[in-house]
Image (cartoon, rainbow, N blue to C red; front, side, top):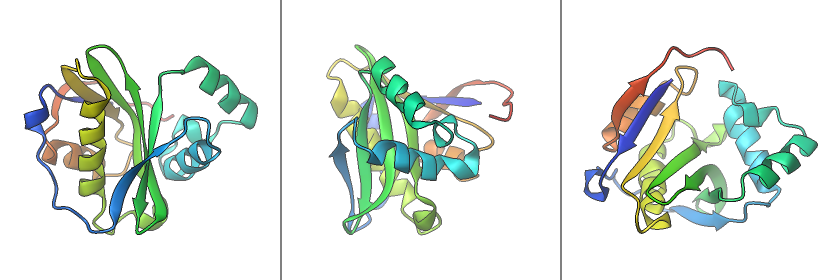
Length: 160
């Protein structure tokens, strides 16, 4: 696992805008949340890709702060960003594109939009952070670094 953080808004190195790519609010109880998280995470073994409907119901009940944004490309769902905002930090819990949108040059700008939204979620945030695994897409960590995140901790990853 690699943990990365950004400790000031001005550390964001924005990617070139992609026309048609946007971030839209998504209700945390929308059936799209489990569907998209499962489809995004299946290739990388995310726990969210294996949750049953009952497990999702329990997960939503246990995670009341989590907010979601839907990444759209020309009106089509293209991915998702999940946040866990706290008083002085915002954790990006999940970020990813649906398989059909991977490799099309959308990830950098999608992450830019996701980071901008993370900073907007808490007026007192002193950092935005996330973690990634070596089992995630090979461009994930390089993309995080290109956007201005800095590694603050690493751990040996075990297969999810």
